[in-house]
Length: 429
Ligand code: GDP
Ligand code: IMO
Ligand code: MG
Image (tube, rainbow, N blue to C red; front, side, top):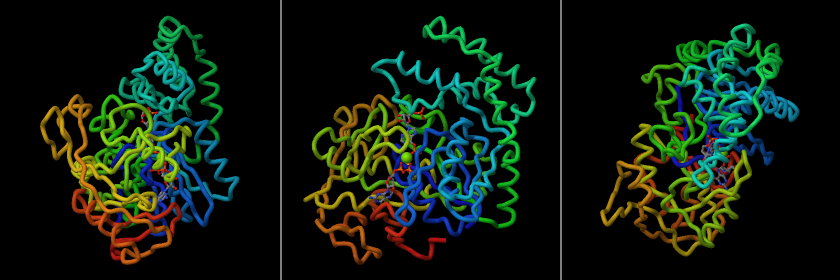
């Protein structure tokens, strides 16, 4: 199976890094196609914990070529910080390729992200403050600076000047901040040029050639379906398309090249930042999920909002992404509950909905309709086959699979690579 997509089905942090790592040994290329250093993927290898933000998780797989494709927005300071951090820990980052067409996040994007959020007050999105939204806004507004611009200082200066002419008005007159100087921005960017140059490539061409040669290419999403700018809980979303459709534009491949689309889904639900979340638990149960599941952001350290599994969302993700399978993670976190509620539909203004409602206003009013499943007391983190799971845990997995819109490929029972039950070994490679 040469082209595989791994993406989030909920609001992020489902365990995409672990899914990528699990497929690791069979992967030749691992491609990030959207987002930036707002992502945080944790991978635990032999008890050692790694976190990736801008780099695809496949950087940790020996022999795999990590690619940052055109759809990503790149903060070069963050990129090199991450590369250096991994290199210091003995990870080989020398194969990394970066698209010449990827857009850059500059200091003015980070500043604008932060001041805009402050300005929004209680209506804020709760962004990661990494400049993601403003950088994508400039891209769509045709005022962005791209990787290739670093190698033509004259063009770079023109572009930064044009962008700042408009932004400085905003910063000074609306936000009461100091203007940002063109030379300072250009100097910083050009300072990275020599180090970046050997990594820069026509990544769409590299990826298509790899697929022509029957190499295995994995496309790893940052964020997730419900944070998709078109199909998520707008405006409480990120500014790109994590869904499978985003792979084609974000990496430069045709839709027919994709063979396998794996959705990663937690056995419960979490969300970071603002926005609707029907199954959210604001009580002790939510606190318990956060503690047991260690639900604190990999990137910002913020406590994640926690709630029960929402099958409506998974079905929606299965449909939007054309999922061929699902990877259910963190089943171990649910040990010790007498009964486990699962959201099977919503009641919205007195009407029952089995599928995602058409409008955001309806979704804001969605009250979950729960079915209850028997819990289990045993620690399942050492289980390696489906049969070893307690009967109640087997029942929970089967029930979720039936209502989630795609077959389950594997189940996670702990953060470690080996703490996984692959349900059908024939599909693992
Ligand atoms: P990502 O952004 O989707 O890659 O996910 P994060 O890394 O932000 O968050 C997922 C967290 O859950 C990480 O700390 C993983 O190590 C951890 N994790 C992944 N799968 C499992 C699992 O099956 N059980 C447990 N207990 N932790 C897991
Ligand atoms: P991974 O890849 C969870 C959320 C932010 C905020 C919204 C917009 O680890 O799953 P942004 O900075 O992107 O403009 O913020 O999106 N968000 C994430 N939530 N996991 C992530 O990444 C996220 N990346 C962004 O909290 O609500
Ligand atoms: Mg994460």
